[in-house]
Image (cartoon, rainbow, N blue to C red; front, side, top):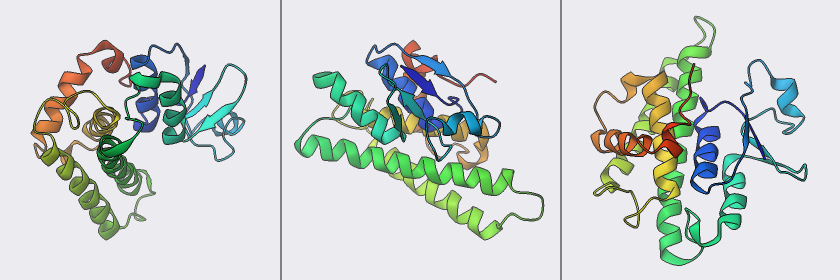
Length: 201
Protein backbone atom coordinates (compact mmCIF):
# COMPACT_ATOMS: atom_id res chain seq x y z
CA UNK A 1 0.00 0.00 0.00
CA UNK A 2 1.02 3.59 -0.58
CA UNK A 3 -0.15 6.45 1.63
CA UNK A 4 -0.23 9.77 -0.22
CA UNK A 5 0.32 12.97 1.75
CA UNK A 6 2.64 14.46 4.31
CA UNK A 7 2.04 13.70 7.97
CA UNK A 8 2.01 17.44 8.63
CA UNK A 9 -1.66 16.89 7.78
CA UNK A 10 -3.36 15.45 10.87
CA UNK A 11 -5.68 13.53 8.55
CA UNK A 12 -2.80 11.82 6.78
CA UNK A 13 -1.12 11.18 10.10
CA UNK A 14 -4.15 9.45 11.66
CA UNK A 15 -4.09 6.98 8.76
CA UNK A 16 -0.33 6.42 9.11
CA UNK A 17 -0.68 5.82 12.85
CA UNK A 18 -3.54 3.38 12.32
CA UNK A 19 -1.59 1.44 9.69
CA UNK A 20 1.31 1.17 12.13
CA UNK A 21 -0.90 0.03 15.00
CA UNK A 22 -2.46 -2.62 12.78
CA UNK A 23 0.97 -3.74 11.59
CA UNK A 24 0.07 -3.11 7.95
CA UNK A 25 3.16 -2.25 5.89
CA UNK A 26 2.91 0.78 3.64
CA UNK A 27 5.03 3.17 1.66
CA UNK A 28 4.73 6.86 2.45
CA UNK A 29 4.49 9.20 -0.55
CA UNK A 30 5.02 12.56 1.14
CA UNK A 31 3.29 14.72 -1.47
CA UNK A 32 2.12 18.25 -0.72
CA UNK A 33 -1.20 19.68 -1.88
CA UNK A 34 0.62 22.97 -2.47
CA UNK A 35 3.36 21.67 -4.78
CA UNK A 36 2.20 18.23 -5.96
CA UNK A 37 -1.49 18.79 -6.66
CA UNK A 38 -1.37 17.39 -10.19
CA UNK A 39 0.20 14.15 -8.99
CA UNK A 40 -2.26 13.85 -6.11
CA UNK A 41 -5.23 14.29 -8.49
CA UNK A 42 -4.26 11.06 -10.23
CA UNK A 43 -5.45 9.28 -7.08
CA UNK A 44 -7.98 11.79 -5.78
CA UNK A 45 -9.60 14.15 -8.32
CA UNK A 46 -10.15 16.68 -5.52
CA UNK A 47 -6.40 16.99 -5.03
CA UNK A 48 -6.80 16.30 -1.32
CA UNK A 49 -4.86 14.08 1.04
CA UNK A 50 -4.81 11.45 2.32
CA UNK A 51 -5.30 8.91 -0.40
CA UNK A 52 -4.41 5.27 0.10
CA UNK A 53 -3.41 3.19 -2.92
CA UNK A 54 -4.17 -0.46 -2.33
CA UNK A 55 -1.99 -3.19 -3.76
CA UNK A 56 -4.54 -3.91 -6.50
CA UNK A 57 -4.42 -0.26 -7.65
CA UNK A 58 -7.67 0.88 -6.04
CA UNK A 59 -7.45 4.37 -4.55
CA UNK A 60 -9.28 5.16 -1.31
CA UNK A 61 -9.85 8.81 -0.38
CA UNK A 62 -10.79 10.68 2.81
CA UNK A 63 -9.28 9.59 6.10
CA UNK A 64 -12.55 8.33 7.60
CA UNK A 65 -13.34 6.18 4.56
CA UNK A 66 -9.78 4.85 4.54
CA UNK A 67 -9.96 3.98 8.23
CA UNK A 68 -13.29 2.22 7.73
CA UNK A 69 -11.57 -0.08 5.24
CA UNK A 70 -8.59 -0.62 7.53
CA UNK A 71 -10.87 -1.41 10.48
CA UNK A 72 -12.63 -4.02 8.36
CA UNK A 73 -9.27 -5.63 7.61
CA UNK A 74 -8.20 -5.46 11.26
CA UNK A 75 -11.27 -7.33 12.50
CA UNK A 76 -11.36 -7.69 16.30
CA UNK A 77 -8.29 -5.45 16.63
CA UNK A 78 -10.14 -2.48 15.09
CA UNK A 79 -9.74 0.81 16.95
CA UNK A 80 -13.47 1.50 16.54
CA UNK A 81 -15.80 -1.18 17.94
CA UNK A 82 -18.08 -2.72 15.35
CA UNK A 83 -21.42 -2.51 17.17
CA UNK A 84 -23.50 -0.99 19.91
CA UNK A 85 -22.99 1.59 22.63
CA UNK A 86 -19.20 1.26 22.63
CA UNK A 87 -19.10 2.04 18.92
CA UNK A 88 -21.33 5.09 19.40
CA UNK A 89 -19.18 6.34 22.28
CA UNK A 90 -15.95 6.08 20.31
CA UNK A 91 -17.49 7.58 17.18
CA UNK A 92 -18.79 10.57 19.14
CA UNK A 93 -15.30 11.26 20.46
CA UNK A 94 -13.78 10.73 17.01
CA UNK A 95 -16.23 13.19 15.46
CA UNK A 96 -15.46 15.79 18.14
CA UNK A 97 -11.75 15.31 17.49
CA UNK A 98 -12.22 15.52 13.73
CA UNK A 99 -14.37 18.62 14.04
CA UNK A 100 -11.88 20.37 16.30
CA UNK A 101 -9.07 19.42 13.93
CA UNK A 102 -10.93 20.60 10.83
CA UNK A 103 -11.70 23.95 12.47
CA UNK A 104 -8.04 24.24 13.49
CA UNK A 105 -6.85 23.63 9.94
CA UNK A 106 -9.34 26.20 8.65
CA UNK A 107 -8.10 28.67 11.27
CA UNK A 108 -4.53 28.09 10.14
CA UNK A 109 -5.42 28.90 6.54
CA UNK A 110 -7.55 31.89 7.53
CA UNK A 111 -4.93 33.35 9.82
CA UNK A 112 -1.66 32.41 8.14
CA UNK A 113 -2.17 31.50 4.50
CA UNK A 114 -4.35 34.30 3.15
CA UNK A 115 -2.65 37.24 1.41
CA UNK A 116 -1.91 40.17 3.70
CA UNK A 117 -4.97 42.27 4.33
CA UNK A 118 -7.43 39.61 3.22
CA UNK A 119 -7.85 37.73 6.48
CA UNK A 120 -11.24 37.92 8.24
CA UNK A 121 -10.53 38.46 11.96
CA UNK A 122 -14.06 37.65 13.14
CA UNK A 123 -14.13 34.47 11.08
CA UNK A 124 -10.73 33.45 12.44
CA UNK A 125 -11.85 34.06 16.01
CA UNK A 126 -14.96 31.94 15.43
CA UNK A 127 -12.95 29.08 13.95
CA UNK A 128 -10.54 29.15 16.87
CA UNK A 129 -13.42 29.21 19.37
CA UNK A 130 -15.05 26.21 17.69
CA UNK A 131 -11.77 24.27 17.73
CA UNK A 132 -11.14 25.12 21.37
CA UNK A 133 -14.69 24.08 22.30
CA UNK A 134 -14.15 20.70 20.65
CA UNK A 135 -10.82 20.15 22.35
CA UNK A 136 -12.37 21.31 25.61
CA UNK A 137 -15.12 18.70 25.37
CA UNK A 138 -12.49 16.02 24.78
CA UNK A 139 -10.40 17.34 27.67
CA UNK A 140 -13.43 16.88 29.92
CA UNK A 141 -13.93 13.31 28.66
CA UNK A 142 -10.34 12.34 29.40
CA UNK A 143 -10.50 11.18 33.01
CA UNK A 144 -8.06 8.26 32.64
CA UNK A 145 -5.28 7.24 30.31
CA UNK A 146 -7.62 7.02 27.30
CA UNK A 147 -10.70 8.83 26.05
CA UNK A 148 -12.96 5.79 25.77
CA UNK A 149 -13.31 2.23 27.00
CA UNK A 150 -10.11 2.32 29.09
CA UNK A 151 -8.00 1.42 26.06
CA UNK A 152 -6.50 2.87 22.92
CA UNK A 153 -9.14 3.72 20.34
CA UNK A 154 -9.36 5.83 17.21
CA UNK A 155 -10.56 8.67 19.41
CA UNK A 156 -7.12 8.85 21.06
CA UNK A 157 -5.33 8.63 17.73
CA UNK A 158 -7.43 11.33 16.09
CA UNK A 159 -7.31 13.83 18.93
CA UNK A 160 -3.55 13.48 19.36
CA UNK A 161 -2.97 14.04 15.64
CA UNK A 162 -5.14 17.15 15.80
CA UNK A 163 -3.60 18.40 19.04
CA UNK A 164 -0.08 17.93 17.70
CA UNK A 165 -0.92 19.85 14.53
CA UNK A 166 -2.16 22.80 16.57
CA UNK A 167 0.82 22.61 18.93
CA UNK A 168 3.15 22.85 15.96
CA UNK A 169 1.34 25.37 13.78
CA UNK A 170 -0.74 27.52 16.19
CA UNK A 171 0.50 26.93 19.75
CA UNK A 172 -1.23 30.03 21.11
CA UNK A 173 -4.58 28.26 20.56
CA UNK A 174 -3.58 25.77 23.24
CA UNK A 175 -1.71 27.96 25.76
CA UNK A 176 -1.96 25.38 28.53
CA UNK A 177 -5.72 25.06 28.14
CA UNK A 178 -5.78 21.28 27.70
CA UNK A 179 -3.24 19.63 30.04
CA UNK A 180 -4.90 16.21 29.87
CA UNK A 181 -4.75 16.19 26.08
CA UNK A 182 -1.12 17.31 26.24
CA UNK A 183 -0.37 14.40 28.59
CA UNK A 184 -2.21 11.99 26.28
CA UNK A 185 -0.12 13.26 23.38
CA UNK A 186 3.09 12.69 25.33
CA UNK A 187 2.04 9.14 26.26
CA UNK A 188 1.02 8.16 22.75
CA UNK A 189 4.02 9.75 21.08
CA UNK A 190 6.28 7.68 23.34
CA UNK A 191 5.00 4.68 21.36
CA UNK A 192 7.22 4.45 18.27
CA UNK A 193 4.26 3.38 16.12
CA UNK A 194 2.78 6.80 16.81
CA UNK A 195 5.70 9.08 17.56
CA UNK A 196 7.57 8.01 14.42
CA UNK A 197 4.78 9.46 12.29
CA UNK A 198 5.29 13.02 13.59
CA UNK A 199 6.12 15.38 10.74
CA UNK A 200 9.81 16.14 10.34
CA UNK A 201 10.51 19.35 8.50
